[in-house]
Image (spheres, rainbow, N blue to C red):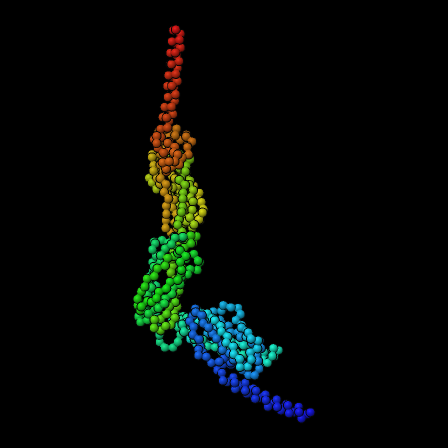
Length: 465
């Protein structure tokens, strides 16, 4: 019995190195293996890809050794380093499991992944690692794991500042906006306008091909008009040549009055180098809100007297969607001046300002001054609303001055032919209102006298009969 056990132990010791050596020798036949699984040779060992395009990466695996592999899983090693994982991370879990149960020795499994090459992946060959885990021999066997390396070739990649990587001297064509203009003097919110850009290829030897221009604005208030696309394409710009490109834009009706920055991203290829390049620039576009300010005509309940203050008031309404600034009221015309400058400050959108102010009357007679309401937009452009006045100024020291000053005054609305006016104030009777009173009394006395004479004549004829 002891001899049999010793013989079995010796046989096991002899076979174990042979099995290990056989597995090692088999693994050496493949350029990439974990010892248990290897990658078979293919016609395309490094698949080619371009940034912002999809690429298919295939792992042609074969099981080595004499033991089946259970619960086999493959997971790419995801990294933020684009040299280690030059793809867009668009999944939470990339793990794939072998669908056939156990992978038997010599059996193959072609596993394919479809990735999107990242926009910022640079040109060149990248190594991508895949992690494998499996149980050896049975469903309860020991866990083992290993790494398989796959190479991908990024032929058109991101080039910060130019060039797509690679050796040798290449000429980078540089694209600039030589000039631009819009088709309107002022850009108002809610209205469309056309932006015209003149693009120049500054290179003297290298052309630009397949130029793609993407536009964006961070606030989202400046967009292509008419649901248009914010992307433009130009097939080619020859060396040291220019092309003109137009884009119709529209701002939102509620866009705040201020400058907005339109960002332009360029992506293009070198004409001979075939390398991919990117660059970006920006254009500043000032957007305005139309100013909509309305004012009531100035109102007074006073009679203008020489040498005294003449009080007025009016309301100012901001019916626009932006603040107006530095609201002021002043007067122009002979014989009057402001008692003091009226400054109302800023008036926000949808607000109202009630202004009380006074005029100093410096001349008697019929005067025609103008009340001027002024305000500014965000860029300091001054706008005005004017109201003409008609004032018949009394001189308290002149003829009938005491009588006139005893009048309590009648409210009036100066400045418009359709407004109610007090004739004594606006000069339609030259200040002789008392003549109308005397005339009325005289007319009444005349009528009474006629009636009295007629009555007496009728009575006299009756007595004679």
